[in-house]
Image (cartoon, rainbow, N blue to C red; front, side, top):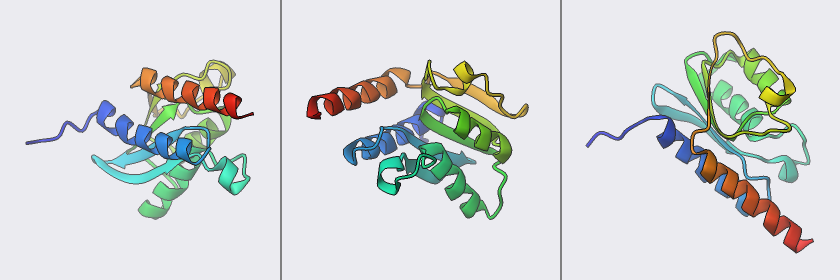
Length: 149
């Protein structure tokens, strides 16, 4: 049996990472980077653990993938991330020259679209993949966070 390696398949991997972040008390954003149907980076938000505002899932994924590939450019790679990248992550993704970005839930206030951040002209963008699942996880996280305070 051949597994369907499509955007939904890899977004489910990113959602698994978001669940890990949730369990650690991090904002539940997960990311994977794929090249030729192979996951080469698997990460989630680490801003609380590292006390670092730049430790977003995408930033961790870029670093991990670049280390794996032995170079700073992520051409021929696809990023799957559960939440639309912010302006900072979009800038880093621009410089990485990543070929494709697939995100789940939109971030209406802080996402790169709302902020007017441009992506690399060769980067293909696909939004809304498993958006309901990603949004639900975020909502659950913030409801629990509010109830604890």
